[in-house]
Length: 273
Image 1 (cartoon, helix red, strand yellow):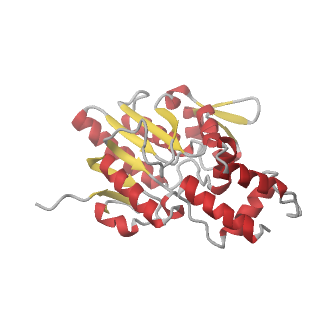
Image 2 (image 1 turned 120 degrees about the horizontal axis):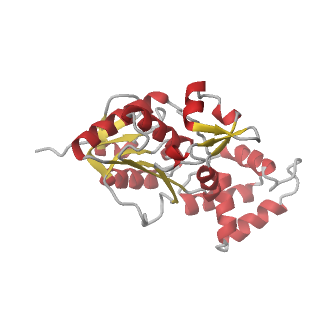
Image 3 (image 1 turned 180 degrees about the vertical axis):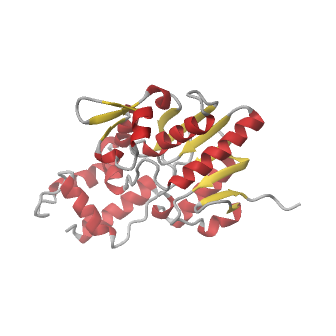
């Protein structure tokens, strides 16, 4: 198990680097991840690897900081996770294109790419066109996860939730028991690294018709959570949708939005006349 000193240092760094609030229940999670990644040995008795990593991150080492971010974050994802949300998003985007001839979407925590690629597939389906007039920006704090997303290659296990028809239409089977996303899906998605708690969001320009921000807010310290939601609201089109995981909530920033159709789906609150 992590020592008290290690966990306290990890708590400080998680907040500083990613706005993440670690509590006592995360101590065992960090220990298990550290063992799995080879930072600690299997007996948990060799703390040198973790100590060195924490020390380097404290001193501003970028590689160590990024490795810690990967340790702190949970890339909980999957193709068409909460499938109804993708259907609602696709329908909304179709209406936006009918009104404005084009639309923009943003997956703020794209992880290894399953979420933005699922959205791209849903849009291709609803538009009945391999080149819908839609762009999808996909960002994440974890640059290692983004490299996986850019490659667009997934194991059979990662594709468990997809039916045979979707696999045939949108993936190409590889010789290594992996499947690759087809170019018609890939070209709809642009990936970029972004830390949502950074002071400036470089290269992020609104408005967006749909913003996915799932499995992010629940990990942020409350002041960072409020700030992120406020900024998301400012980047959303007046009739746009913000989509959270159904288990998440807006807390003190709820006044920026109102519930829309579907669990975890919100629209911008209109200003009172």
